[in-house]
Length: 451
Image (cartoon, rainbow, N blue to C red; front, side, top):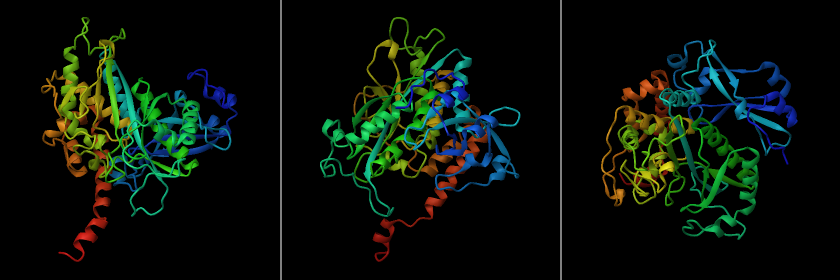
């Protein structure tokens, strides 16, 4: 068993020696949330103290293309400096020999943050709260599917075979037996998450066949984004060891519900009091302003909540996903749900993001929406006590529509930076353009000989 790390503030040199580390995975999250970087021998990692990467690495699309680099990083495609964040040091539990992973911050040569870095964007949003004496707290819920391995992308996905020798039949929501069918996988995943210090809590079987959900303990937004970033890789690596796939697609199977990353959020003041509650325990004006901010700006930041063409297939009524930004108390049909809680735990659950998001950007966007709502003292619509699935669809229906809304939102440009918004939209536009060239099997089946 890998020794437990006693403190997250130990120098990296001490941690490397403590765990007998041979190599260090030096990683940054790009705009899609994919880990990019270098693997360095421990001595080179310690002597260099940092790594350099082309700034354009941040601009990779999910399929490996890049928009026009010159517009966003300059014609010479210069390097950026990537500095290790000691708090993110973790042992890689599935490696054959002692290996560590360290998330890096991207900075310019003068030490200022690289504006295109998702981690820097989240830091800047958190800083807006800090300047007002507030501390945001978040807790993500991660849904994902276990599916049978296959190599043909043209074939539909199927649930994997568990210990019973049969795939799941029908919906097994909250089934203990359905989870136990994959005990070896979950036992190893639990161990890896513990060694990796990911702070996961509850495991449940969700509604879809082979769909699972894991919840995280609440905490600092940047730390939680780091943990989600590392968790996705941990799940995929564990699944491969058990000869199955784990997917974080928002809608991997046509007839099954999609997978979300619900984000619970609250705001504390300098004394640790929840600003969503008054001293008498009732809801504060800030609570309603925050909800109104999500209602008003949520549609403008949909590319960060639904970043791919597949993401919009999840957002369909009667499929456990929101279609608008109604809000309600303990109402899971709404885009904004208020869980039952005491005054100290009063929080807002954003149910829009799919699990395919870049966690840094999804958390930054939801906090930015709430911040603007409080700053502008916006008032929400009335709470909904019936099914919000019966209401009109009020979200962008396609990635192209969502990109246009984000491009036109001046408030988000001011909070996240115009350079970042332009580059992020360019990445999403290129992904959509690439997808739009694909002729689907539906088109061949129904148009080839009939029109």
